[in-house]
Image (tube, rainbow, N blue to C red; front, top):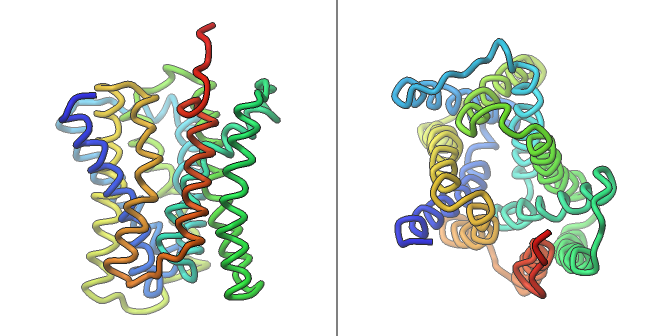
Length: 292
């Protein structure tokens, strides 16, 4: 990986790590549903403008069911779950829970796709789950059982990401990565828009709230997707996914700097166990897998 790709990788991790910061800042005024409606709507408009420059056809009419599934599983549902959790959980914890998506993917692959569960994958899952146990156990012990709904939402969101990933992998070449992002954002917007009738904006957002949701939509969603796709083109999907290991680092860093969130031993230990579990599951740590 050359210097330019490494720079893009760190920029992407910093941007996605900041998304939890912006959700924590803006969700009290907007509420979870309205916040995500603006997030995906702004991102969809941004990607539409970008598509005019890169001349990428969307083919929404032919692939609308596919884009609808991706839009729900990879954007609308997990975004709302994280926004709900952001009402009470710190940004640092949300960023670490987000990193569990590869662990869920390995578990679902073994249970649903009948992928053989090797000893290394089992060890990685056990290590990752123990990290989740450290984080969740300490949070519940400190704040009581009232945190269960938020923690459950914070774990269901990466589960949804992993299901979306398996769905797209089962349909290779159906759409370009850019079309996946563009089409799914419009479908996510259409799905979330009617929900605003059930959960309207809570209060009058101030300038800071609008700035946060604008950055969340344009930078953390629209621009981040473009940067991610550039990484995939340059270094391949496997190396591009190494951003998973960096997002929690930046999420914890931004939470500590801008929100004065405490970084205790449980955050460091739980995060380290989860990242180690991901590395083992992905074959980065331990014996290398033999090529088939």
